[in-house]
Image (cartoon, rainbow, N blue to C red; front, side, top):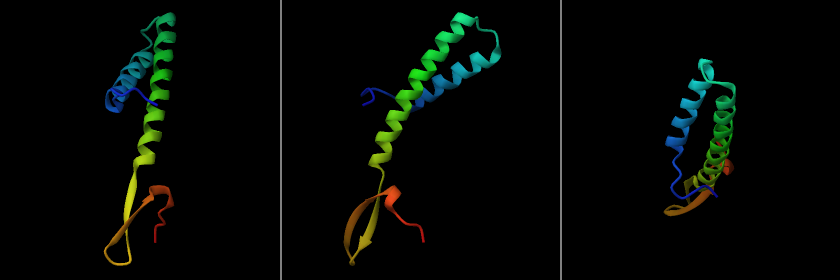
Length: 79
């Protein structure tokens, strides 16, 4: 489970910063490896958070008039 104060937006911004630094070619090898390790950790945390959010995504579907049910997004069929 991702950290409670985890922010996808901040993590994505940090990943972009790391990518920019690595692509610049101006970072020494040892620092590049450290940045790569940080990016891999952030990427894993982002993936976990996205999986949690995906499970929470629900679609309300009308069934029998006024009764509503929730279905997982992946179960919903597109007509």
